[in-house]
Amino acid sequence: MKKTLTINVAGSVFNIDEDAYYRLKEYLEKIKVHFSGEKEIDDIMTDIESRIAELLREKINSGKQVIILQDIEEIIKIMGEPHDFGDFDKEEKKKTYYHSASRHIYRDPDNRILGGVCGGLGAYMGIDPIIPRIIFIVAFFGFGFGLLIYLILWIIIPEAKTTAQKIEMRGDPVNVSNIGSFVKEEFENIKDNIKGKKKT
Amino acid sequence: MSEMNLENVKAQMRKGVLEFCILSILSRGDAYASDIIKRLKESKLIVVEGTLYPLLSRQKNAGLLSYRWEESTQGPPRKYYALTDKGNEFLKELNSSWSELVEAVKSIYNK
Image 1 (spheres, chains in turn green, yellow):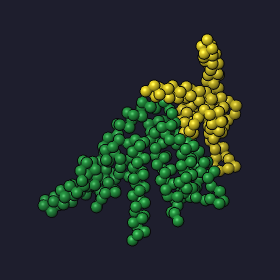
Image 2: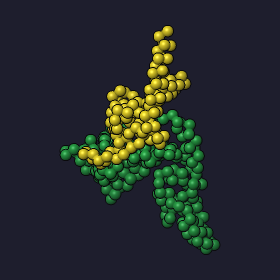
Image 3: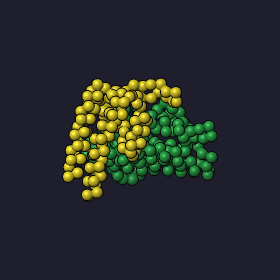
Image 4: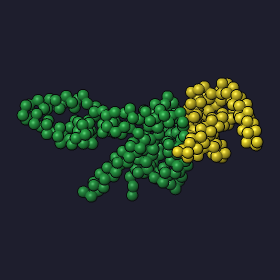
């Protein structure tokens, strides 16, 4: 038994296995990163999604109602990975674009006790979040203003919501390969969580 | 390194020809992306479909193509691409320079 999700691709609804969904999502994010900075990115994405919807429809029949991972792999093979698209105008631009991504401070929703402020500070400074946590606790009990500072930081620091923001929080440049590995990592986490829940 | 250059040259060659072929296909009648893809795949001009979409968008932005949405019997509306007047002029130019190129290459190749 597998859990399925319902997705809307270019106006068509599909039931899709969870692993297939993450593979497709990772693929589309990669394409988006590949075309980022292009004026026509919205048009390109619309066209690609429409084509993917068409290919997905071909995978569905009365006996098979759910898109599985194998289907997505086949579709990706047809569409191709971004580095096989072979558009030369971009080659140079791309490199500089990716490396300009710098480290930003965000609250870390995956590594938090209260608001993820210390988790984010830790990721930003490349240290274990336990260090800012201890400093805040000491400042709270020792001097009394730790909580206030924490609350202010909680309000002013944005939360890392998208995959790209989480990568920026760690200080890695956002590019096609690390967005891929990051999405995979997140998916593994979710899988582990599900397994963990089943056991308990 | 020489292999890299070969790939580069091959891809550059294909890219120019590809743009020419997209316009040629559309000159015979409006088509939606999947029609164009089918034709290009049949003639083995593209390997992966992703190659086509950025080209279509750029040609559209350059005013060579326009598109409209059309209802379809199978599934949601389709985006039909059509050649504009500017695209037609462009294609004429490309046609003549293509013949010139073929002649030039032939004359050198056969010597």
